[in-house]
Length: 252
Image 1 (cartoon, rainbow, N blue to C red):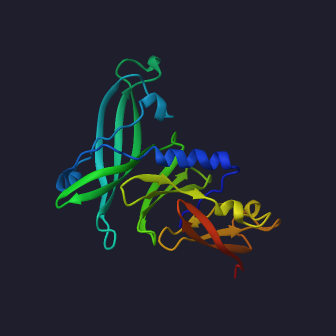
Image 2 (image 1 turned 45 degrees about the vertical axis):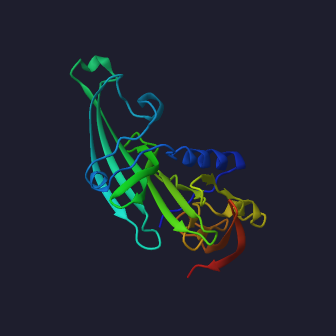
Image 3 (image 1 turned 45 degrees about the horizontal axis):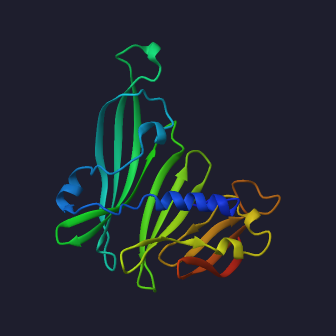
C-alpha cells in the first residue's frame, strides 16, 4: 500500500495540490471508446525542456506509446475509466560530442481519467504525465475515484517519488455541475501537537472510506519498523477533508 508523505508546510501542500489541479482537461471532445482502448490519445503537455529531467537534445526524432492499462470501473463508478500509457521518445543527443547519429531515450508514464458521457464514447477529463527511469523524479502515479455522500465524485491522485522519498496524495472533487475543485486537507492541521513529526513515511488515505493509516514512530524506532500505527478517520465537508478522530495502535 503506497503512503503519502506529509508536507512540511501549508505552502508545500498547496503546491502539490495545484499540480493535481493542473491535470484537469476542460475542453476535450468525445472519442470512440474502442479507440481509447487500443491507442494512446495525445493530450496537452508541457514542452520537453519544462517537463524532462534527463538528457535530451532539442529535436524530437520519434515517439512510441503503448496502452498499458484501460480499466472501466464498476458500479457505482461505471461512467469512469482509468488508463495508463507508456511513452518512449527518441531525441537528438544533448551531448553533441557523441555525434549527429547519437540519440537520447526518454520514457514517461501517463495516467488518464476518462468519462463515458454516451454509449461507446469516452472523453478525457484529467491526466498527468511523469518521466520515469533513472532521471525521473517520480516512479509512479495512481488515480482512484470514489463517490461521496455529497453526490459528488472524489478523485485521489497518488504520486510516488523514486527511491525512498515516499508519496504524495492529493484530492480533487467534481461537483454535480461538472466543475472540479481542490480539496483542502485540513485534517493535517487538526492533529494534536507533535503527531505530524512522528509520521516519517506518510499516510495512505482510502478515497472510498476516507480512512488513513501511517507508521507512527517513537524516538528510538528504526526506520524500517515503527512501534505504533496511526489510524485517522476523515470526513468530507464541502471541499475539505477534516479530522473525525485519530487512534494510535501498538504494532505487534
